[in-house]
Image (cartoon, one colour):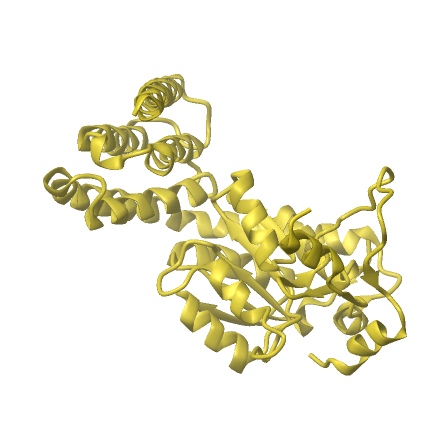
Length: 175
Length: 177
């Protein structure tokens, strides 16, 4: 396990509940982070992402104006967003499978259920940094690869384009 | 195979390689597990220090819930007031364990479950919501914080069983329609 230099990381924490924002901010500050911007609704969070340019967004699902899923969809817009590759950790009290799949399909990087613990938050941030995933671009999805592991029983055609053109796409994009 | 499915199958999938700039910038090579464990320990201590404020947070959440009840009784659970009560309960579900009240998180989860899964929330009596709010109030006032309290656990179990019965009945009713 390598050490993360939290003092170099900028976070946006989006949650409509002030107490929860305080808890997450307290954890991040204890990890060593000093640059933490808070947002209390989806619109403020989007504005913070565009202006504060964080390294990681931690967002709730249930928020006013637009929710965490809609926020993620807006950020994961390769044509209109300033920060389409931003790592997004969804921190929510919704733990049902339906919500997890909805979050995954909107393009979140990690999903974390409340109650939040220091250990769980640290591990999600660590995973985002240590194990960045490839991004997938199709007409219906843009975001981190939703396959966490290869299916050993898959025997269909490989439709993913991993030739030099695909890699050029990656090289041309900047954060 | 439908035309739509065939189109999806034929669509080009572009794989963009993982970005490593964040990793290169903030990951300190060669460090041991000790530093990570110290960071986690420091964060746990920081939350412990913050915990002196937790009782105040819990009390203010309960006050908010109690304030919503008259309007919920008047307008029903499928109203704006019902939605506001649901939001406060949802917040409690997420944070009560951190605040030292795991049973309050359970009770909030039970009511959220009812409000999110019932086929028609207008059929759910506001008295059910009040019962949950009063139970939370009782537990915070009378039960031991952070510990297994038999009274708190019995209240939580009773509410959960009641909600399961209501949901079963509501699903059966919806199926018959």
